[in-house]
Image 1 (spheres, rainbow, N blue to C red):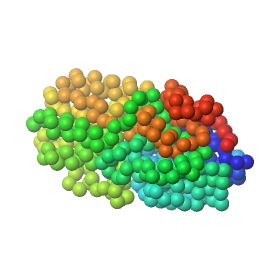
Image 2: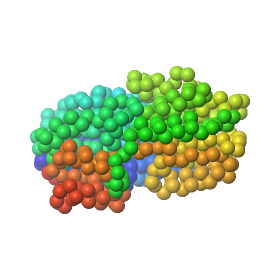
Image 3: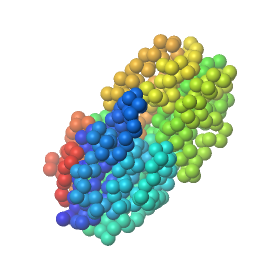
Image 4: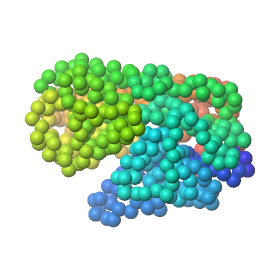
Length: 444
């Protein structure tokens, strides 16, 4: 009995995030995410083979695309709630395929719920679970012994929350993903006051994003990324040239900056790609911001080629496209490899993103960058700041929360170890920092 943590997914890889927190005979699941590389590879293989699209839980678990919930099958009936921290697919994307196994409500912020709803519609899936939305900085009861709190934090997608699970045996804090941005361009600063209150009352265990625990600096603010974009878009002469920019479709704050700068350039913003439409539409429905006004949208793959064929004055528009990681089926890759767009010498192509450090992305981006350079375009890469905590953000969060125990997650082994080193530097003992892998149970 007591407080138990079971690492269902995300502790042996980057992605498939899912943690079960058990309190006596009640439990909650925190996140239910995809392993993006494995999911994309599996679905693309099915398309190439013209095979029937099997997106059952069993099929996706077999190819390691979703968390293996059969590890905790004997506890399915104990799960009282599924709580989602934010709208990125490595935290949310497995919900359509797995949540029906549980007789539990899904709890999320409004924006996260809107993105989930769009994903369900796209896959033509209906859930038996109720989808319950909560504002940031709210607390709600999910069972007799468990209440959950959504605490506002900054990340690269709106309405990201740190999840605090309050139990009779102490509070567990789940901070996966986040950064500490004191000058966000959209939304509020992190709720430092509440983090300090939680720390003063006592936090039993912190589960924490450690992707960049080895990067010895504070994560730059999103306001810095806006200035970087301004410098490239307004500070470099693009007269008479096309401007194509790609970034994370879910990064609404970044997209807002791009749209604002497009208008200063007197160019009409054009969003091209299905995932851009999904996230931008969700932001509008959630009442966060309307980026659709004054912009053109080309939503579906079959319309992209037709759109570019009718473009007569590319220098009067700013093309915002999918494909920042060089994904083969995304718009930018199709523009290059399928010749959907005729690049002119010294057209501007801007990557407002970093390369997510997994093998497929590194390979795909290297290939795409090379192909673009061969077209003699002006290439601007890494016009970006991360949405993840670097070492000094992590230090500050640990100081605020003062947890008894720390569990690093969301990183390769090297950076999990870097998070442990940081904790030891702060004053923790080795037995207080737990480096785990999937399928383990830890009791507190």
